[in-house]
Length: 206
Length: 206
DNA sequence: ATAATGAAAAATGTATACAAAAAATATAAT
DNA sequence: ATTATATTTTTTGTATACATTTTTCATTAT
Image (cartoon, rainbow over all chains, first blue to last red; front, top):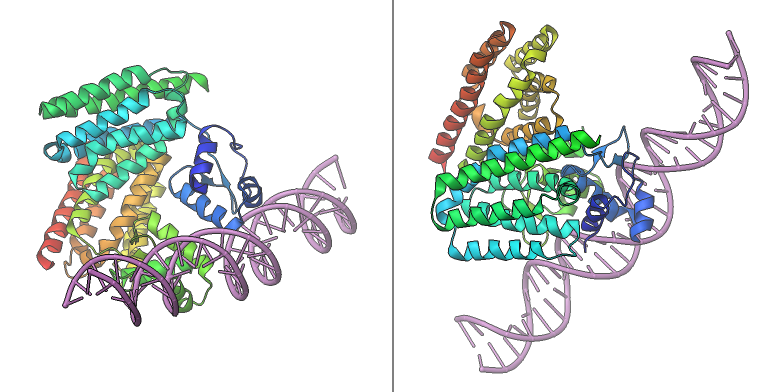
C-alpha cells in the first residue's frame, strides 16, 4: 500500500487530527519514511481536496461540511449523466458484467471505507470509461474521489447503502436493455437524491 | 517567479519538448535548482493537467487536441453560469470595477501568455468568487487553468481577442443593470461560441 | 534476421543534512 | 497589563548522496 493510500485511509477513519496542521516529521515517524515521500503524498492529497493549505505553511484535513457535499453532488449530477450518455452505446455486455461484479463485492461485509470507495468507483468507471472522453472522465473521477470522503456518513449512520445498491442494479438493467433516456434520468435522480439525503444529514449533525 | 510558474510559462510558449518525457535532471539544470523542487513542480503541474504520466516513469507535455478543448468548454459552459447565478446578487460595484481593470490591462500589448491567462482569470474570478461556493469555484478555476493552455491559439492565429473582450464588457454591463437571466445566457453562449471556434480551429490545423 | 536474455546505463525514488522561513516564546518598553 | 521587539525554537524548503527501478543496448540462441 502506497503512503498516499495509507494517509487517505487514516483520514477516512478519523485516525488523523482534523483542523490541526499535519506536521511532516510527525507523519514521517508515523509511517516510518523520510519527509520526502511525505511531502509528495501531501501535495497529491492537497491537489485532490483531501487536504487544504493552512496559512503560509502546513496542511490540514478540512472538516466535512454540507456546502462542499452539496457542490460535489451538484457537479456530479451535471456531468455524470452527460458522460454516461456519451458512453451508452459503447458499453459492452462484458462491461456490465464487470460492474455487477463490483456491486457484488460491495455487498460483502468487512470492507474498509477505502475499499468501499474503490469498489464504488469501479462500478461507475465502467459506465463512464467507454465514453472515450478522457478530460471529462478525469474531472468526474476527481469529483467522486472528493465525494468519497463523505462515504463514512453514507455507509454509516445513514444506512443508505441498500437502497443505493438497488438503484445501481436497476441502472445496469436499463443499460442492458438499451433504455438510454430512462437510464440517464435514473442516474441523475440517483445522484441528486443521495446528495440531498447526505446534505440534510450533515446539516442535522452539525 | 516560482519554478512552477516558470515551467508553465515555458510550456505555454513551446520552449519545452512536447510528447517527449521531461527528465528531472534536465529541468534541474535548466532552472538551476535541485531535483527536489523540480519533482514538486512536476507533480503539481500533473495534478493540474499540464503534464501527464508517461509509462512507469516520467511526465510528458500532452499535445493540444480538440477533444480536450471540447470537454473543457463543455464543462465550463455547464458550471460557470451556475456559479455566476449564485454570485449574481452578491457582486458589488467595487467588484465590477476590479473586473473592468483586469479587462483594461488585457488590452495592453506586450503581455506574455501567462500574464494574459492570469488577467483573464482575474476577470472571471470577480464574477464567481462572490458566490461563496468554494468547492464549485475550485473546480471552475481548475478548468480555466487547464483551458489556458489553449490561449496561445485563441490569442494568436484565431484573433478572437477583440470579440471576446467586447462580450466581457457587455457581461459586466448586464451585471450592473441587474439583468440576471440575460447575463447568464450571454455567459453560457460566450463559452460555447469560443469553444466551438477553438475546436474548429484545432481540427483544421491537425 | 528476430526474439529472448542479461548486463550496463540512465532515470526516478528516498534518506540524510543543511538552509531558510515561520511560529512561538521570552524580554523590554510604554 | 499590554504591546512591540528580539531571540529561540520549530517547521518547511532544498541540496547532495545513495538505493531502487526502469530503460536501453549488447549478446546469444533459435
